[in-house]
Length: 211
Figure 1 (cartoon, rainbow, N blue to C red):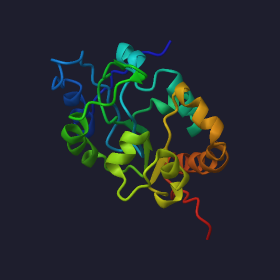
Figure 2 (figure 1 turned 90 degrees about the horizontal axis):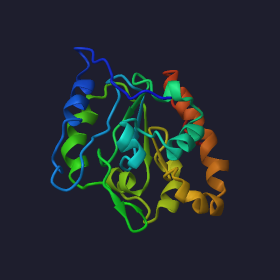
Figure 3 (figure 1 turned 60 degrees about the vertical axis):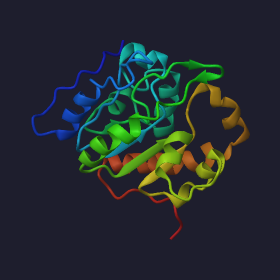
Figure 4 (figure 1 turned 30 degrees about the vertical axis):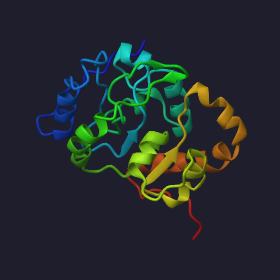
């Protein structure tokens, strides 16, 4: 059974100190049950910006601790030990807390989180070489002049590589999207895995572009 994350903070790791402050956030306490989930260290070479914690993540306090996380780790070709090593992965979602249930799934990330916390957290990441923008909310927030749809944004992944990969959400609810778009696993996953491995090995990130 995976243990809840309780990082030992180095006195000089400003990012982890900021994460501790973010985990105390109560900006939306009147509307939701707050339990901010954000982890990492300032030297992590990979930054994951997803949507918002799901119910299971909210209950455990462990990011991507659900079927979505299992599929994401498969896409990245990393095991749990690597994924939860805070010296390797920093995880800062668009919404830090579980936003609650809507009519057709979880509600969107709370709009206050990214504008308030991302400027305090992301500049403290010193060495990150690869950013994974997972889902439409992260892509809309961080990609300028992006295509209108998530499908077209992901299909044009080479526009953002090598520093950034735009990915669909790995939720089981997206099985139909994956079935309709087999090119994603054929064309995007292989260079994504190479980029992840290169970042973890502190090598030059694979661009996926022809010379």
